[in-house]
Image (cartoon, rainbow, N blue to C red; front, top):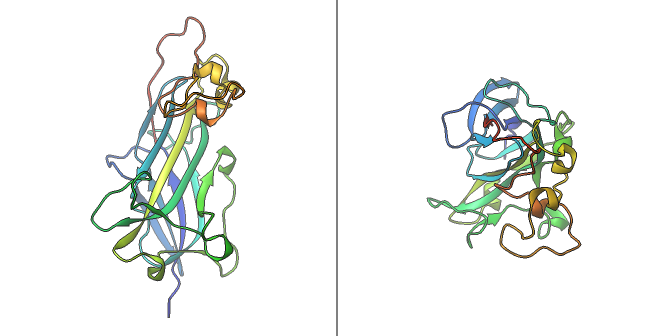
Amino acid sequence: MWHSRFWVLSLAVLFLTPFVHASRASGRVDGSVKSSVFLSPPFFLQQGSVVNKYYYDIPFPRGHTALKSFDAEVVDEMGASVPLFETYLHHWTVERYYGPKGTQVDRWSPNFILARNAGVCKNDLAQYFGLGSETRRTSTWVPGPYGIEVGNPKEIPSGYEERWVLNVHAIDTRPGVKDRFRCTECKCSLYNVTKSEYGHPLDKDYIGGLYCCYDQTRCQLRDGFKGGEVRKLF
């Protein structure tokens, strides 16, 4: 018989940490529910710049547990929340996947297996936490005696182990960018992008979206604005 262990998770997407991978900052136990705060690796932005990074095998809770809540926040080096008008969080996701024991893999590896939902959607839809900036301060609490099950050993393929991958896509919109609103909309003309990050030409009718604000692109700055301050975030 499986004895339930419930977790309430928080992810600080920006916080000063010496570790390469996410690390647990604090935890507490309240009856059968345990809460923890995790810190992401740092990333760096200056006015108009974009990051869209993937961090694999982050050390989230291991074992057969159930998640009751999962919240995320962008913070600076002092741990203070960063407003959306300074760093626009286009999206963030945390997903489970299976990787061969003793081997690091990424989403392009042939032996990378994304964990799927149960039931009728198990072959089509993956379960993940996060998405856009609207998730900030939005409750994710699962009510009653329920939780989102993870780490079930019966579902892990032989020779594999369950892991977590974090994806963070953020745009620096501090003063200095030419058009803050259209930078967040990823207008292709402001990013001077005509090809995808994989080198494929974009359709002439594609005027804005994710294909124009990929990792290491930069939104247009105001005339006369030079450089910009590099900011360390988590």
